[in-house]
Image (cartoon, rainbow, N blue to C red):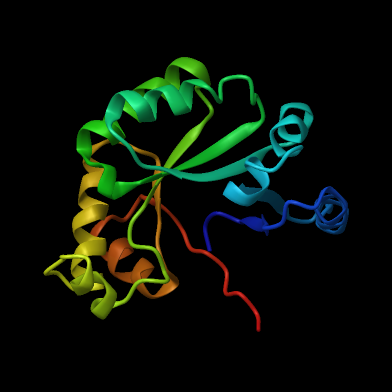
Length: 182
């Protein structure tokens, strides 16, 4: 494991629970960064909390829209100085990914853009239902190609798919989501 950063999902809109999670992950032995998703970011106090948050964090918004709208979304994050990672959907296309990457360097040169391939909730059957003709693995590889071509910093994919992406791209940041316990 080259990158020893661990990301901890803060999947709640409850500030008391968020503070408890953040307190429990403090350590000097490991680099642990909290990941805040849509649920927290869109909550009544989520955005305000992140504006004042003093440590690095990952904002998992999975931005996916036409390039201009996606750029406006990214531009609206410029006040979140400690945001070190954001996610965008690879299926937003090469133009959107390139535009977002360029915009992030203008507003925060330390902000890393991570392309999300296929949501882990989707399988081959569900991809067919929405019109895809490729398997999950084929689509993940295709989207990894687009993310790499866009010069984004890395990719988010399942642990199962990470091995095939690593085989193709030796020096690419790959982040895999944790497994939700029952």
